[in-house]
Image (cartoon, rainbow, N blue to C red):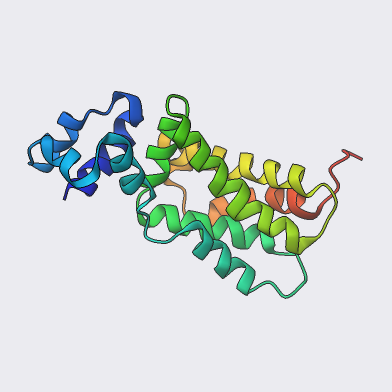
Length: 185
């Protein structure tokens, strides 16, 4: 109950504006319990925001499990896997993390770790093209931007578009970032 309340408050307000008192009130518990159970706001943030239904490793594991050495279609599988995961929690954990990045250094480090170290660096290793780190960073910008527009800013029609529509529009760009020509030629 406390983790669910924390996830909601962090998602709505970000790390800096969220208070232990607000979270505890929403959960119907004494604020002292946050320190007792979690040792403070920062640990509660980590537990609540990173307590997703599946981890980035699981999502990417599913994508790479289907990888047969031919990178075509990889962009589509990645976009679909992340949208399916994020939609299952209405983007709550992702939204809380992104809202907190600007004001909380640990959130920025978590975002970078998830998208670069755990996801796209691994994909760049198996697809094997040149400029792996640059490609990984381009892919991260695409997915993080998509998540921000869909789940944080909630721009329409992107926020309510069905997954197939979004995948069809975004996957070709991600595929180019993964395997295509980046010179503009």
